[in-house]
Image (cartoon, rainbow, N blue to C red; front, side):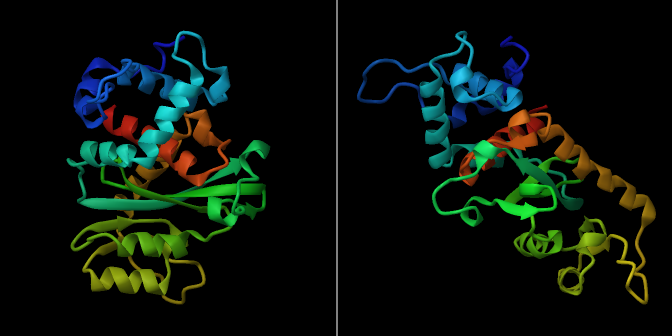
Length: 254
């Protein structure tokens, strides 16, 4: 049961030094090995099961959850993702968004739905994942919004935070807006996306290069193999994003 989701030896060697030491300098009872804890977290992410349903082959579920949250609050997940993505291929970047339905147990957190990236779209409560991937389909950055948020609005903000000079930017029609095209022109980037059907003069784009846009869809497919991401069970946006970061790390290590 455990080996199906476990991280492999060569993958672990790439990231093991990025996690805090199991034993504190002041001593005390030795903590459970980080790799064992990570495998337990991957089991929860892939199976979608509640923390309390963790099999007995893993440490106590509360210990695993506590370390997962501790690493999330300390920014460990982001640091690991930053490390594994240093060798990205940014000849071109691709941007898109996908909807994740929110389970009934995923709503009701303090602060309201808007603060937890939960909105209401046609299918009910949902969260939208906005992602930018490199030329090989590996994730570079992602953000969460409510499901009703338009792709282009948040996509514009994500693109503005990137250096896109002389890079190809692949996107679908949803990102064909005047602000995005003006920004890409200012950055001397190359837009590769079809125009909306209501444009009087359709923009020209390279149709052969545009076919590569399927790689961002492949990324969404990979992370949604994790049932904890295919459906949102987590009340807190930060917890759901931590699972998304964990899945993205595994995508880079594959």
